[in-house]
Image 1 (tube, helix red, strand yellow):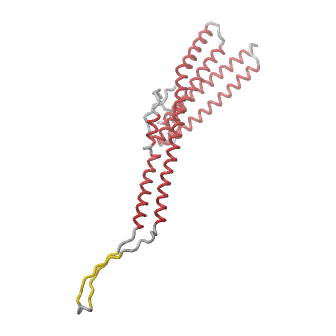
Image 2 (cartoon, one colour):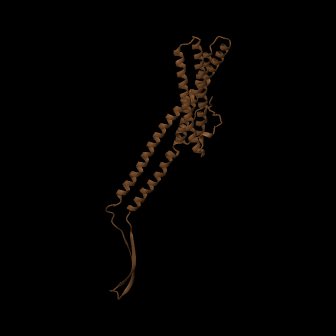
Image 3 (cartoon, helix red, strand yellow):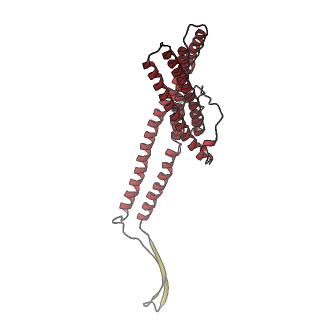
Length: 288
């Protein structure tokens, strides 16, 4: 789901950057037309050309990002010709955030931490084995014996040999096995602490990108759409210049681009949280 969503975002970003390039070209043509009519300076023409070149660079950059995103998705799908497909879909968003404490509890059972339980069991078995090997072996023996004094009478003799435990020769191995057990516990604590820290950072990024996306969608996007509509009406009535219409369109597209950037950061934070917790109960943002 992560790679699919990233390709969708990259596709939409390419489309937006292409529209912005078309706007830059229109603005450049309009400025040149005004310059020919002595209503714009050569400096304004140079600035318009620079803006077009910068937007062309942004478009090429977004195409490279799309290509990179498709490489990962194609590898997942085992598709060698990653450039020959285009995804269709809509990203949706549940604006409520998951509970941080619930995510933190999931770390305990994640593969990142669970592996240390298996390693601990191995070390515990090693300790028990070394302790068992430190115990002395008792020797039991028996057999027939002929007594010379009794006229050659025979008797069955049974005995046990118990070695003296003056010094345990396996203490070094026992201490080494216990040290290995402590190392596993220490490593688990370090990994757990680092995972909690990484989760907090990813959760903060998730919340911030979601908040930014909501502000753009609910506040700035409607304002930009209203401003564009008013500017186009003013142009039709001869009140506004065509350059004003182009600038209003540019402002609208830039807000939509910012929404995509927020969506991309949200997806990256979501992927990090899923990596740490193996949770998958997330939704992804709606894109413009």
